[in-house]
Image (tube, rainbow, N blue to C red; front, side, top):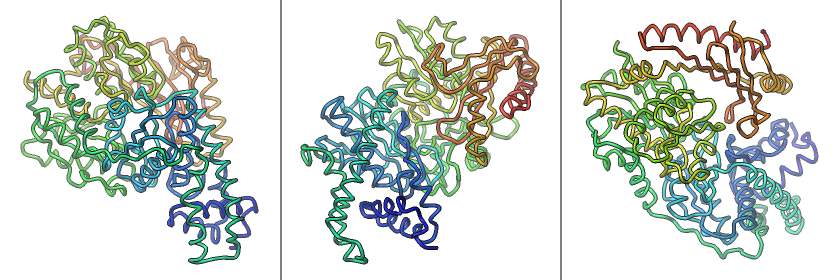
Length: 595
């Protein structure tokens, strides 16, 4: 199929992209698509990857809708322009994980910052996201960039942005930076068009074309950055940021309990070596590791979707734990950029089960309240889709419980919004935990240390994590949570829009046979800043929160039922399971329009 079957505007734009793309692989990929798959080219150039409060995240590939060197350069140039106008000049810390192109993207970002007059501090080697988040504060940086796609599939990469407070950005900065990026991209296209005309490459192919285009590829974006070109610098930091984060992680510990056997998997990510160093510095026994998943590998060969929440993701860890002698007391897992923590425990019948994100949160909450009871103004934070157990236990300890929108850009924000409070911890059910206030983001490394400490303390008392969860249920009530999801995959754009509209505006009279007593349309911002979704409270104390996923193509419903477990925890769990099944069926009916 001829490349001329691509629309003339798209063809011109694609050829211009090829001319300025610094990467030979994506240039060749786009050339091939122009020849053989013009419809794919149309899709690649149908808009631009959106920059939001979570930064960028997309599949690798050519064009403005994918992650590539052109997009990273334009994004960083737009960020540099926004910083100049709103913050001024200073140092920006840049980190990267071990995914395909991560180091290249980080080096490109650092170079663009230096060209704009900033001091770029590039962390050495692939590193966990919490190390970068901590380094922003530790280095007194005006911003931090982390090149990572977290637990996304292997084909993806991303660009995460922190501002000087060490927290990911929120509105309106995201929209302002997005506008600056779009402005740079428009100017970039104009400069490239003029340069191509000057270089007279039409009809020139092969090595001669490449020779003429090389100066354009190395300078197009930096020409847009003003009078400060080349006045900045790129500094390659040594291991100081990692050492300082080790100190911060160990500083999150609250007791001297260390006798525990841990089995650990890094999920082919960058947390392994760092976690081992932290365990050694804290005085724990070295964790046994899952060797097949310990070293960073951007192809994630044993995990198609390297998220410890996914079914099957921990199977290798379970098998190794079952064969170990002596057996570990618990399994811990980080996601690939080590900002999340999963925990699995033996079920007493020879098998292992992963605790829910909420159950892990319960254990952390219990631990920090029992050992930080002397705090003058204790505060804990959690997202609205996390269990209401946090409110119950905070009330019992006389602490403030702050409920936020989803994402640690909100969960960590009380650290700066309420500086006089003692921020004990923050969590969200998607395996994100922040213990203390030394890192203003979720940190799977320090959380792993504290979880090991919790398990060690319970072991010394002849208990384990499951026993403690039962004790908490008996004392505060059994809070059971679950999820229902509806994937957008296979849906038309209209079907997706209809589902989102239904979820945002529904006012059901009942769910699963239980009367609805209150509906909060989250777009109205009754208690929190407006966001997509709905919160539904039922007469029996159950709750459902429905919202579109921020990182995956799906609608998610978060379900919670509460049972009195004072007399019999096992019976309460059975009752909760039956109620949860009915509630889940009712939610599915709501989401599919069957109710």
